[in-house]
Length: 480
Image (cartoon, rainbow, N blue to C red; front, side, top):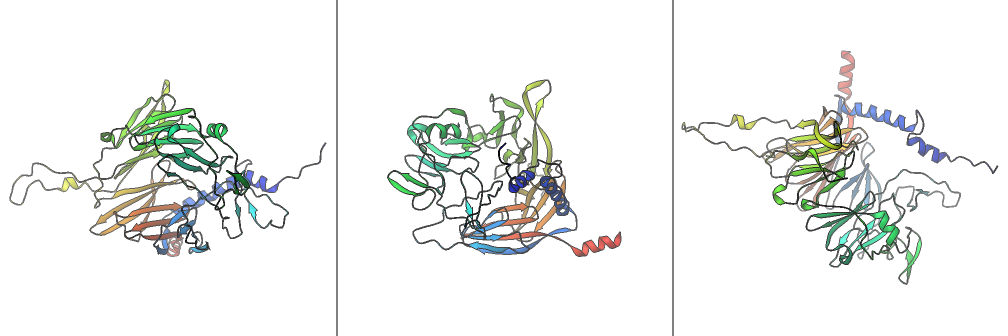
């Protein structure tokens, strides 16, 4: 027998978080999140505006962190009042922060014994060093862009071992208008509405010229440097000399194409302008249309309704219009295992009065009004749904509803049960909501964050945090 290998405590802890044991850390976390959900939705809980700030540059939010000045300044929103985590030095005049890579994965710490062991490293094929303050090490990132002769983009999916740039030349792919990578699939789009899917793994195996590791020394084209650091950057290490095997192609209006459901289905809009707002749900295996698979919301509005697969991995579909949110489910047809049907799971309706019923039928002079004109479904004076999102940890649907009377717009954020659609909580937003501005609203555990872009590139950020009203709690205790 060889020497006994000592167990790695960190690896055991990481496995516990994935739920390998009964009563493990994963079970405890789920219990805690259930308690938090009950606290969030109880009547005495309020969401208080604790912080408001304004900026001349875009504001971004991701997992409890607010980023300012093109990601140069990072503020934590987790504390009772947001506080600055770090601020990177200003760039020289020759440099500019173009974009940021926000990377997350299950963390497994490799504890070393070197003099630099105060720096933790995420165990992965590509390691990203982080100092104790949470600042990432310097890296040169490439982003998708189009040039006259080809489209370049960088694959940055942390789940894959191979990293690098790809050049989509017109000689191989034709005139590409856009391209992206998702779940190991290369998605290529064309101006005609055509969408083509290729296996990225097959492309890397067949066409990668040299494997590159971020942070490692490399010699490329007669130049030596470190991969990911300026000015060397990330070489274009995948060169396609032939068209890779095609997995799937479909034509859709404005390249709109989504995959999801159980089994796999896709959603498209037929590639004709008059079909805008009509969605077809089809099986991926044979392109067959699901029963009731043509979804068209009967609404008269300036802005189009939108549809997407539910992010909770239930295989359901969310269809949002100005005055209703439909959650649809995909079921197998009885006695027909080869076909599926679409049916309603539940519907959330806006709180509206039927103003058409109150319209006069006779003028003041006694003349009969023969025709009545309907209001638009997204008329700003009626409650209209603007944002629908899903909080995965609390299993809640969050819906932003807005009503604008004269110049004053008021919004509220509603929490609905993700399983049944029941309204559980409504939170008024204190700031005015102008429907002509761009808005983003994030609900993250016990935090609500509203980012607004006003004219002249003025960005505002409003942070709400959960608080329990002690007055109401005391009143409830005394009455019991």
